[in-house]
Length: 85
Image (cartoon, rainbow, N blue to C red; front, side):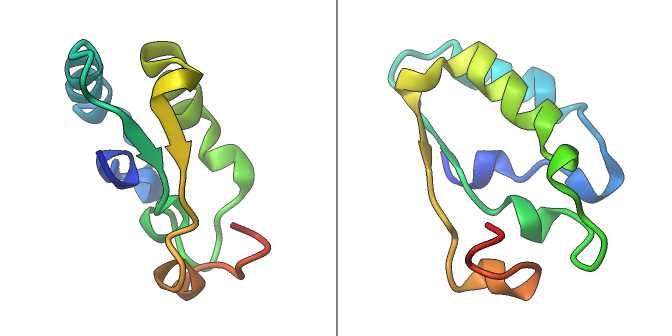
């Protein structure tokens, strides 16, 4: 699954994303790519802490062995520099 399934980070909404992604994580053949976070946040006013509840939940339900990271370059540069991502 790409971009952690695009939760509404800009509004700090966890539901229904949290329940739906947990359902997907119950399928052993599904992996999740942590990417696209900054473009789902408020482009001009995000902080790293905005992503913490989402990433924490992903680690809990998928475990690190079923997670990967992607920069989402160049799209991410709409909201952050490459080094910030």
